[in-house]
Image: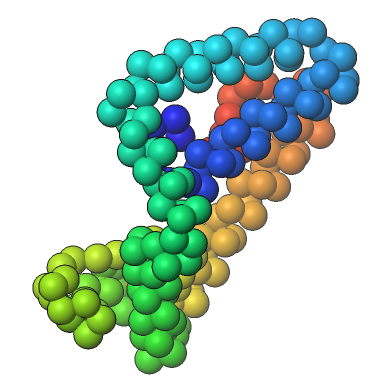
Length: 172
């Protein structure tokens, strides 16, 4: 997450650390606060180390979003890709079109002539799963995640304090 160029991932990281810090202080658990401060310190060190190269890219990503809003190139391209994928789904609703099949039916030349022949992919995971594997694939992956959630919940209820491994698996 730290070296991700995704604005959503970076914003979510900051929000999650802030939320955990707030909950730890509220519960007055000094151990948790110390751990969060250590994580925050490591995060600051990593950001300082990467600030020369990565920092400029991250700043540019957020600046483009604030200056151009939804007219930013990557945002518009995601909307176009999502719209095209949604149009493909009804044709093969149950089984989908196959893994990485979006490039077969999609060509950027329809929208941006200079991008003709460029390969692309569907960045939205549920939409990509639905496009590539259909309703059956989407239902299968949802059942998988529900099964994991039930198992983690069972372990949490059984144990007085959840282990770090269970918490990490649940977060992943």
